[in-house]
Image (cartoon, rainbow, N blue to C red; front, side, top):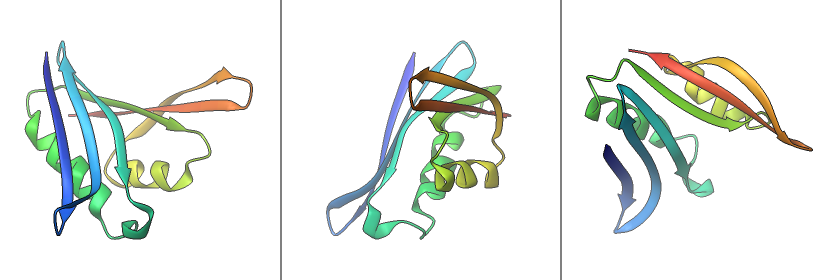
Length: 102
């Protein structure tokens, strides 16, 4: 299994990061974050695009996010991800599962 941790820094401060790992031809995207003061500048998109470039042989990319994380969902849709499942994890916590076919 290959694991990748990417970070985006400004003046030696980490303001964004994403993690991904490959298993059986699927890249599982985890923990995309961008500091609130640096959001809406394309950093999340840039991190996602770099992650995808690192796993060119993956047939699919999978991720999940909270169903009320509208900004995250909008970002993922803008780079080609589609929802394939919504699941209630426990009371008041619902996740949207998304995929991108490569």
